[in-house]
Length: 285
Image (cartoon, rainbow, N blue to C red; front, side):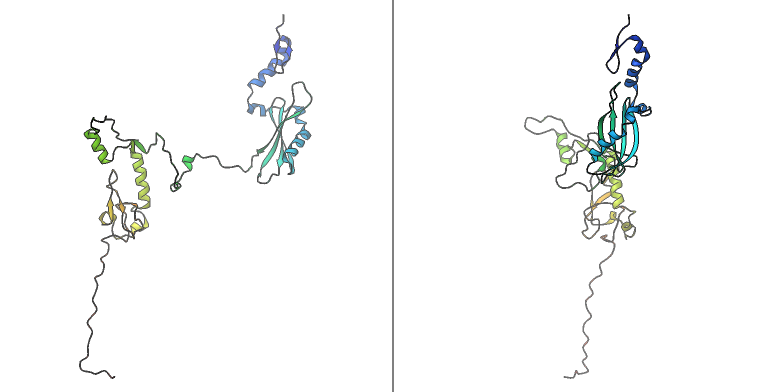
C-alpha cells in the first residue's frame, strides 16, 4: 500500500510521484539559499512577464518617467525580479525592481512587490557610525550629557570607603583623610587615560610647537606657572599669564613663550636730562 505525502504545493501524491519529483521540489525549496537561487535558470513564464512588470513599475514611478529595461534576477522557484531604470530626481544609479511570481502548476503570473532599489553604481548614504565614534573634542554644548561606559579603559576604580558611620555621625579616620584629599570618587583616571591626556596636552602646548621653539626659556622657570596636583604634576602645569597664548590652559613644563616672567628685563625709566640755560647770551624780545 502506497503511503500518501504532501508536496510543497499542498497536493497529495503517491510514493511513485514522490520519487519522481514532488519530494525533490520540496527539498530544493527548503534548502537552497538566496545565493544559490540567483544562479538558477529563471521560470519561463515569470521571465516573459516583462510587460506586466513594466506596467507595475510605471505606476510606482508616476509622475516620473520609467527608464529602460535592465534585466532580471532569479530569486527562487517561480520567483523573478525585473529591473527598470529610474529617473527619480536625487536617486542616480537606482532602479525599479518588480518581483513577479506564480503558483505551482498555474499559468497566470502576478506581481509580488515593487520597490526602488540601489544599483551597482547607486548614490548611497555613508555607513552609519555610532555616536561614540562620531564625537569629537568640542562637540559638547550647554546641556549635553556624555555617558561614560562602565568599562571605559581611561578609568579605573577609585577609593570609595564603605565604612559605616559612627554613632555620633562621624566616619572613621581613613574616610576622613580620603575625603580631605578628594579621593572619594567611584572611578579615577587609569594609566591609559593619563597617557592620552598627556599626549593631547603636549601636542597642543609642548616643546615641539613653534611657540616653544622660539621661546627664550621654558615654563618650568616661569613665575606665571601654576603647579598641578596628581600623577602629572612633574610634567605639566597651568599657565596664568593673561598675555600668553596658553593662558588658562594646561602646558608642558618644557613649553615656553615670549611672556616668560624672567625672559626679558623691563628697561628702567630714564629721567630726562636737566635743561641747559645760557647765562651769557640774551634772547631778543
